[in-house]
Amino acid sequence: MYSRILIATDGSKLAGHAVEHGLQLAKTVEANVIILMVSELLSSLYMAGEAAFGELDSFKAYEDAAEQSAEDILKGAAEQAATIGVAAETRHVKGRRPAEGILDTAELEDCDLIVMASNGRRGLQKMLIGSQTSEVMALSKRPVLVLR
Image (cartoon, rainbow, N blue to C red; front, side, top):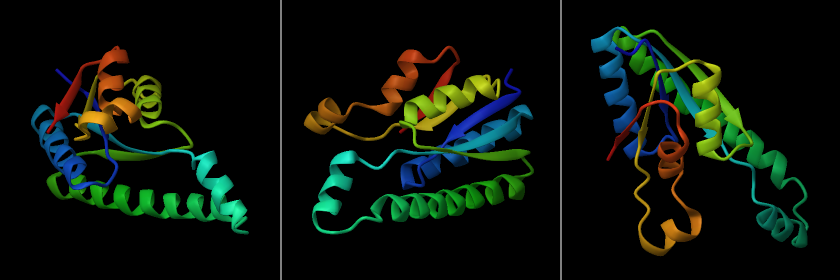
């Protein structure tokens, strides 16, 4: 049924449940897994505010923190996969909106299922920011399994 599953994570507790579920599914159907984390670009508005206060290295600091965070999160997910005997590779996509990074990686890696968590945004926040999960579901050419 599925031979290559992409599991997206941001390191949150909700995404952790999606990682667990996706790995168990992969084990059941004997699929390989790509575990993905996408780091967004630092907001230009934030960088301008930091520069106004004399902080000129915020972009480098953000990149370093994002890299370390992704490394830690992906390492933990890869260890989970190894523990249950699932073949998994990890990917960190930098400087992209999560939905774009997920969709592009699924296409590039020829994944036949995307597993991800719902993001839990509600009301005005969802309207203003939008839902990366909704965008993936709307634009994906591949099946998407969303876990709450």
